[in-house]
Image (tube, rainbow, N blue to C red; front, side, top):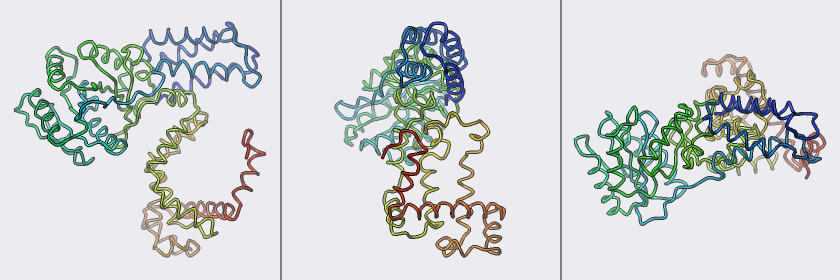
Length: 451
């Protein structure tokens, strides 16, 4: 997401190098490029105009601090204005109500409402320790009810059964009654979508809204529809009092126009962002972190939080002890590290959050993919337990057997062995105070690193 916008903005701001002050003349062309970058990202025209005017107002005549270049000063202004445009800070779900707190999901067909209900149920249970019930009021789409039942089983949420012969309002009312009886904390109500906004659909969802009185009414929208997503959200908000928006399919949207338009057009906050089909691919929306990613500065906070949730702390502690004792880093350790990386969303997700990754050439980015990790794991799985524990045993005939067993070439096995040897050497250096030596050596090469 935002790949093209990040690239354009980074290139544009670099053009200000060598200037001593931000003036109307030297930022005129830069702002024109910023405007074009936003329009190409499918941001709504009124939002673009307002954004560029605010940046210009803040930037013109600003003295550049001695520690900053004009480009860096403008990045700070653009970053602040991006955060304002997207909503200042994350707005969490307001579940402070007499249980069960009802969350109503609305949106057009194909936006990913049902999948989002499953993802949200998982997030509320795992991160907020809530007892969640889900119900489908979609009696029109074939297999919609069955799909939600499957997702509920997957995330271990309570599913309230419904039939396509029932009235949607009756289903929602019965589910609310059952949720009360079972002392549920949250009831997630999945409603029917249509291919376009129509009066019949709006009337039905208004009836459901009146019957269950939700504390949150979330509009689920496909981010790939760009500024149309903002316009659809606005139309829904006029018929139904929305409390927030969930952006879906952000992994397939390289432009990001929806994220930058929705808040300003609807006045409603984006509360969650979905990226991918996996059931854990739903994250709270943080405007400040996203602005940082757009400008190529990464999102280290989200990366740390992801690591906290995904990493096996016991395995990490064992590896740390092993390294401290000077024991060898073997293929079992390497396999654990690779699998934990995949649990954190894979290489693509990690690169997206690391600072400076936006400056990498496109051909380098294309080579970084999760298939490489899967191939490495496949090679390790073709080794015997003894070979994994004692990598030095792997010679000619063993290499050929491992390559054949994993469907790879002997060159691939050699490459992996070389990588493991390099990691083993690095781990040896870290043992016995070597870590501090490495840091001191790095300090001279990396400005700003003080220990």
